[in-house]
Length: 318
Image 1 (tube, rainbow, N blue to C red):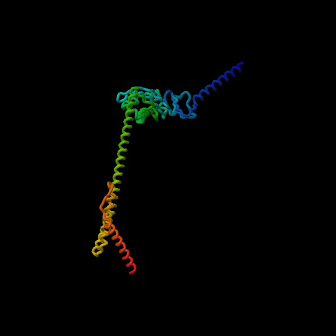
Image 2 (image 1 turned 90 degrees about the vertical axis):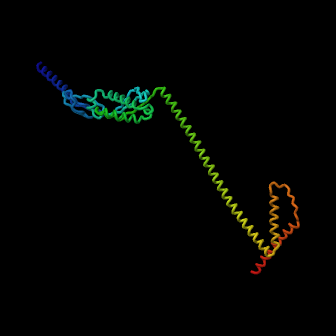
Image 3 (image 1 turned 180 degrees about the vertical axis):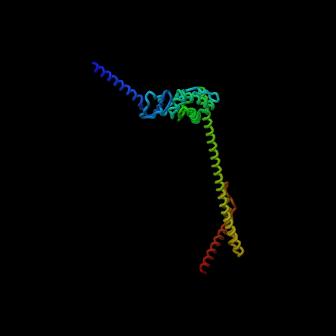
């Protein structure tokens, strides 16, 4: 019986030792998941940070302090009423993206990191929008986002946090201001439409005036060219008449009476033609001497015959 009692006591001791060893191993070996970092405290004081993977601690002395998520996190900023520089009330809400870069600072420099970032963002939204007019705040969101990012990232740097982006999701003015803005926008668009229409009429008038001016210039150039050609024609006609007169004068000087008859008959027939072609002439009654006209015509015939005879004699002489 004593042997059995001794064996029983040894088994219990061995079991207790195994249980204690398992507890020590559990306390000593830690597996840190990817995307997290754990702080280690020794007797309540921070000593080091455990990276992802299998890590070892000194049992009893060391313990895991805070488990920090190192992945980029989205923080939704609640909506709030903000007064702009021109005393307009605007409902603003935003969203922020941040990432912990130092687990120790995020764990021990601020008590509630998420709440601190949310409060800091809301405060700076009021500050930035309060320094801008309503129209400026509604039309310059990129500038607002940039200013918020610079301020919040700089303020949260001691907490071991990197703020990567801050975006204003919505800026909603009150209904009466929205209605007034809609009327203003409509008036501006109507004004732009009227200006564009007036510009179109102005351009059309300018083009029409330029077209008429070009047409007048070309018409004047045409008249100038026609007058020049008419002058040339009259000049040539005058030269021909002068030459004919010279030839008749030479014939008269030689004693050729038929040349006189030709010249008189030509002027006589031209005068009759002008009288007959007048637009207001219905009936022409002239006391004409038929023998005079026939004589003139016969004189023309004699001149033509003599010209032909002279030409034939010249040809025979050659």
